[in-house]
Length: 202
Image (cartoon, rainbow, N blue to C red; front, side):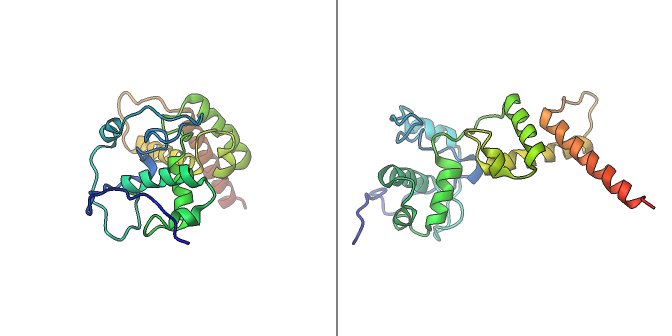
């Protein structure tokens, strides 16, 4: 049975822009489809265009990074078919499979995803949970509503890179380290101490 769907555009050759996976400016909320409370968003598409900035043309293969057109279509299809029928939804997104659609929605497009700056309280929770479970990002995500597994891992790795950059670019007035930077620094020190003790244990 054929599944009916609306065409994305009357233009036979629409211009597509690549949307960076970790910083997609398209969400179910700002496209006017869904909000966390189930109501319609009042944000206009002009605001979306303003925030997205410039993009690059996407290859014709339909695979790889997602375009704004694909994100819009996926959000519309999830609103129509729900968050379970990924194989059905994938049939309407050329070059995409159900797993890709599911991960794109849950990691980047869900209206309850938080993409703003991390707060000190969130970093405290991250540190406390990491001290208990280690690098189990999915487990840590359960303690941080709105923060997805990928975003937590990326925040952790970005903080580690900043810590390394601080060591290589010392200034006369260095910026104070964040709680997470200090925690990661302590882990690295413990690891070096343990390695030294093992090496010199006669």
